[in-house]
Length: 124
Image (cartoon, rainbow, N blue to C red; front, side, top):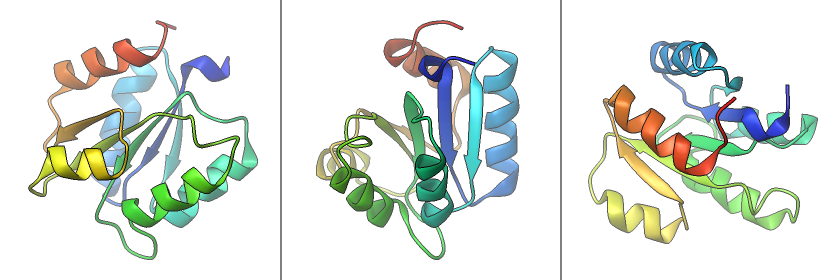
């Protein structure tokens, strides 16, 4: 699968992660999964780099803020756009602070998710 169609989902809620992965796979995207920021960094190290990252903010071990901080330190990863996924408040402010390409409030509406992804990635 071409890396241009690869999406990394960094989300600690297994149910949300699995549903998002299934929907995106059905749309033809290649999906990589991580249960927290540490696993997300592992997926990036394994390469090739995904074309987009869906990033939860509140996770154990390493949260989305810490993940993004580490991502921005690596020249090969810093240009990968991230889309925040969060149920928390102040979404526009958090997106700005993290230089996120976009943000979606949980529970994620599938049409909104697919429409947002289409802005960043070519159709598989």
